[in-house]
Length: 344
Image 1: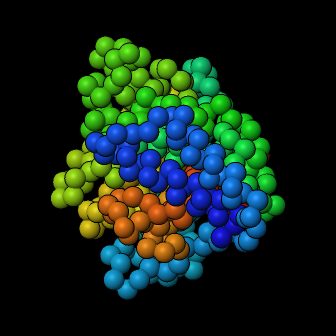
Image 2: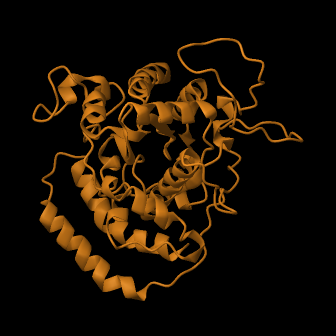
Image 3: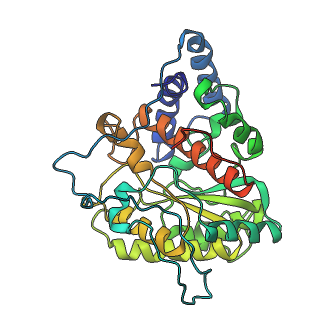
């Protein structure tokens, strides 16, 4: 565990309670009170931290895990493919070597950008989207307090092995504390498409949270972190249907969607992560496989003392760090820069 991860653990102990409060009907402390609490914790512990090695290597699944795996092959397929742009679908002679969505658990944590993804991004820049702004669609677990907002402060430490990430932090500095209109307490895939969930003070009449956010901040990239509020037992096909509608809106605005898998399995059969992978595969857009990143953590990164959808401090650490790695990989791809040596 790196110094950066250990530091996040301290921060997460403080924000974990705040997230629980934000996702319930209890009274939430004011921003000034929360900031004072975080500052006090950070200032009293930061100097005692020491650096160790980061380990992001996923461990093998247990024998009881119900995630399908492939038979061994002599050549591992990649996520790179030449895909005909949507919606103009036409035959192509280029073979599709991407991994099938049913093997989503084997997809890499940090995706490789496809030509189609680059096309979406570049078209959005021509449409006026801001290359230095990313945004988020999700519930309270995607608020800046717990999702990459720390990079807008001076309370993080990357260590020598990951110092290259500082360039990406500097590049997106103004986005880390951005309050997205696509992030609301309890937001789900269908409510993200409902105008009743949009803030009437800033959103136009008839706009849903997704449309409102795309108009207000004109991001070039948007993380779609959904699924944790999907009712157990509900149809994964319906979830996938809503997710596709969200992606359609995002792509029409020239914004590159980054879909994410979730660490929990409240549905019992990983059907939501599999559905998310199908959407990423069909649209040829990036999938950030956070589920895989969390597998090497105790209890798969989940907090065993709370509702099973919530992360433990180590889970928050890994989520923030791998999301930053995804953002870095995208920035380097769209700017034509090489990936750092050894970064997976």
